[in-house]
Amino acid sequence: MKMRKLQLLLVVVVLLTLSAGLVRAQDDPEPIKAEPGADLDMVLLPKTLGNAVFDEAHEGAMEADEELENEGDLIFNAPTPDNAIPGQIEIIEASITQEVDAIMISANDYEQLLPSTQKAMDDDITVVTWDSPVAPEGEDLFIAQVDFTEVGSVMANMALDILGEEGGQFAILSATPDASNQNAWIEAMKALLEEDDTYANLELVDVVYGNDDPDDSYNEALGLVDSYPDLELIMAPTTVGIAAAAKAMQDEELCGEIAVSGLGLPSEMQEFVENGCSQEFALWSFKDLGYLTYYVSYLLATDAMDAEEGVTFEAGRMGTYTIEADPNREGGLRVLMGPFSLYNADNLEEWAAGGDEGATVEATEEAN
Ligand code: RAM
Image (cartoon, rainbow, N blue to C red):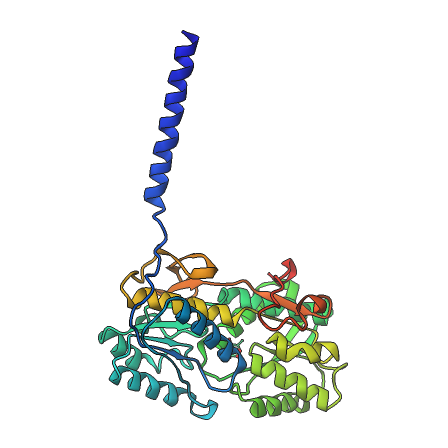
């Protein structure tokens, strides 16, 4: 009798386990996988040419392109910094005429590209933004490198790390005035400084724009030094701006006096951390961002996947992701990549000489 009861119990347990598994399988469908070998013409359109981070994104996209054995072309094209917005519009319009299958954009403006990106979508062209989005109605979805609110707190924490609790004056050296990523990050940082007493002594005195042009950024950094005699820190949320500001401080022999921080590329910033011209900076992998963007665009353009909240898919070596509502843009969808990496003199050995890909140092708790 005891034996019978035990057997019965076993059967019940097995049945329960099986049904739980089935329910889970229904809740959690298998991630969508890309079928290699499609024939798609895909355009990778970063903000500008001549920026190392966009070349790294291109490398990542080429890696995915090869892996997915796409028979079509991967076209890399972008305007020069002096023609940033009209240049992007021209490239989108030309891509529509060429009847490409997907356009992957890091946008120089949130609104002005909309007529063209919407026209592309009406023509059944997949429009995925990455790095810097357009307004939600002009894209299928956005590949967010990291959470945009988190960029604000990472920058605020680096400023606090460098200036200490006594704080001091700092200025922001941004890229172009209309870049949606830059503006969202600056707003997030400002909001945090206002809301949270921890940052009460950090005094933001100005925001200037170097247009992601090395010379303009260099001159803007020098302009800040002239305008604010008590300036203690330049915070540049752009890889072009931070390297130019560090170079300007180096040339002016101001490295001990005015700190430089922000979002930088390890390969461009190593010398400035070593010589004390930059104290700390953060970034994510642009190669991965290009790779993930390509995978998502390929999945959408082949109709293997719809751009809808809750859809889960596999992006090759990067693993599984889920499309979610973008908390920073009402009505927008995003795929969130991450992580943020934090670079400074303390972890120099971990990241130096590793190249930008070998240099992933997880952001510490302080940076979050
Ligand atoms: C520059 C560009 C880019 C931004 C990085 C951090 O290269 O402005 O859009 O993501 O900096």
